[in-house]
Image (cartoon, rainbow, N blue to C red; front, side, top):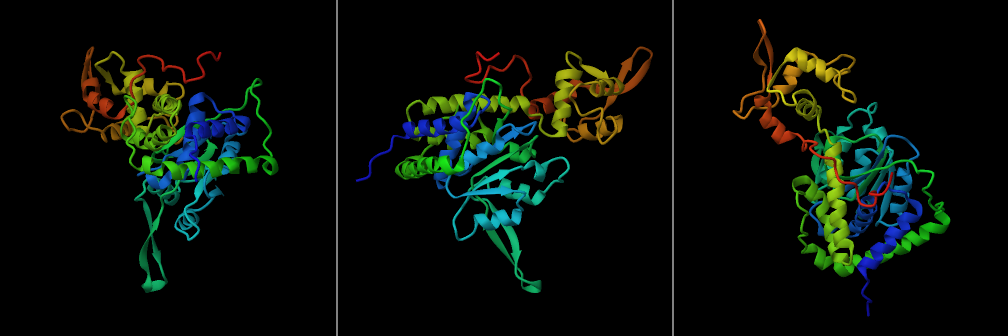
Length: 381
């Protein structure tokens, strides 16, 4: 007779294991990581799988250790560093079964000096969906045929800096930082602690079999304001939390709201969206029109903005015009400069009315008020 496993207690144990060796930046991160570990055992129950990304501005922030602990908890872990797309899609479609890919030092693949690596980016994007496949030609010479390789698999990544936008929007982002002087963890020793993680992994696998039918039929309720791609990312994690019960459904939704808000606050999107956002939030605040020369002066003077150094040159009127022309006004016309009458002259410039539609469609919510603190950080100074 199979003894039913208490899912909430099991997730508590997985969280306690992470806390022994990992310092995450806030409570929401622990919740998300634990739910991601568990969801990897239920992958076939979901239409999509979120990537989890441990990112930091500097080395020594605990990213690799986070992957190392996850390695002991997920099914068929495959640790990758500088792996090619070909190696990964063959591993995912191979006879040994679907691995859980733990990709360390991913900044060497997508960093500023690494190029675009479109093939690997395509694999990671396609594998987000259960229907995702990667097509390759098989055979020699004129005897080649097109074969579809399944790409669907759970992926965790770690690296410095950021990731391509298409991967970021499919990910739960954990922004790691170096341990503070008052933060301590237990030294991880694989010979000692790996077996402990494997016992938790086996319990997760047994629990997953017990709740599989429940999870397949689940349509978890999303927190207010979580829609579209963020809802795709969080739906599997919330389904796991609901199946576990106890405090986990509540904690999962608190973590979802906190991390989605944090990602939106940090997300400037593409360079075009960054331009639109800076125009709205810093350049044309309370102004209905502004000459191009004044817009460029204000943009190029912004701190922590790219406009003063775009490939070694500041943003000029031609590039500004090209970038804004990619977006439309409310009348479905490209945004272009128009005449602005000033004292004694007429200058070319832009009207806020022409930008309003693009602002509403593409920009993150305006910073009307500070974001609430992430759970567990309210009293941190």
